[in-house]
Image 1 (cartoon, one colour):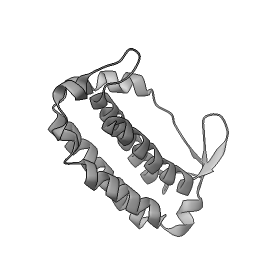
Image 2: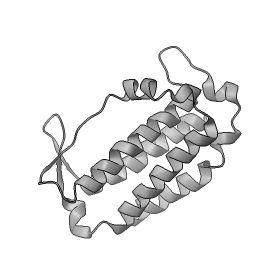
Image 3: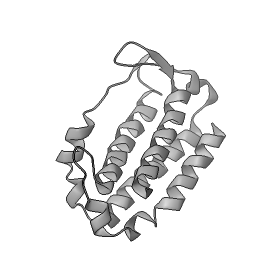
Image 4: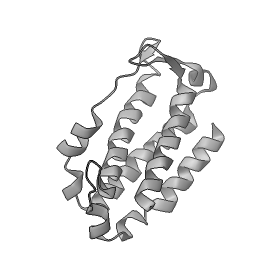
Length: 146
């Protein structure tokens, strides 16, 4: 878990000041059927909101925890990330993820084994969900930086 947390902190700290330096044209360019780089950052913000709730709720809701999916496309559109100021969007993304790091650092070892039931009935545990979140974040950061 410690390696995932260190990677997570590195990803945040390397990119919080970088994203606002990308030109508006590059940030807002859309390719057919794809999100712009700004919308990808918005998606990462939505993901942070939902995972912050998940990582928190699992500690006090009856087990096993039932993972609730969310409509990623609708959220990106409804939150209008394409027209949001990049400095505000970056700060929102950064602050939410810093709170997730606080939770990850304080989670008890036994909580990492809490079972999570996915919408298809498959089971994972909190440790997998947390480490997968960091991998998801890195994947989309690489898309923004490409």
